[in-house]
Image (cartoon, rainbow, N blue to C red; front, top):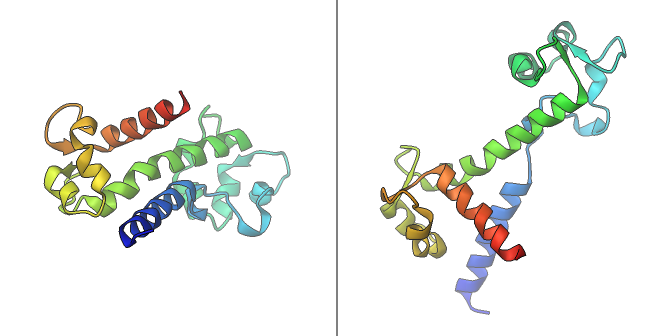
Length: 156
């Protein structure tokens, strides 16, 4: 196995790890010591978290995102709403990771030059396939769609 293959495998492994791992902050209710007991904040033990309970906790992000997490706008957070919010946050992180590392000028897209300047030969090679609107830039959406289509093609 030559060094180019080893480097490619290492980069691929790092990307896969980054996409599949989620930080503890992705869900404001995550507690490392109590993975299955997200309702430590539920002081009245009614299986939902009120805004008052959230404010009384040390979970600042829970309070900041309370309205967004509260999908049915009833003023209470259920386990399902928390899970849904965590899923949404993980989904948003995937595309942001690639952009953060490849978008050198931070304009929100990866230009042909930025793609060519990376060690990701596949990105440069597949640039025209990924760039569906032919604007010589790869958006986060184009990258996500390409990955989704690639996974679907592998299953068939």
